[in-house]
Length: 120
Image (cartoon, rainbow, N blue to C red; front, side, top):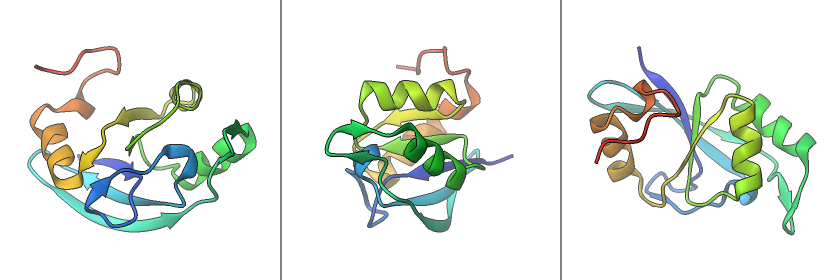
């Protein structure tokens, strides 16, 4: 069964977006051997000048309701903690989207419990 994840990117090539400033998420289904693009979802960025708004976080989570993880270029500790407490897995993985997704598949990161360390 594929894992649905949300990528904070605007070009589907690089992960550089900060979670709190992301205006869109590219939704991907990650399988055992490959991945497929599903759609783009637009959100209202949940951070305003460094200020966190939990209602805005909840609005983003509602839009990403069927995703089990977000993959971002950067995320603050407070935002990450908030998402994790609401059962959203968080991956701070700046870089090339294809490389990050391949590594997630190869390491089977989404098949592991969130408290298991990644394979080295």
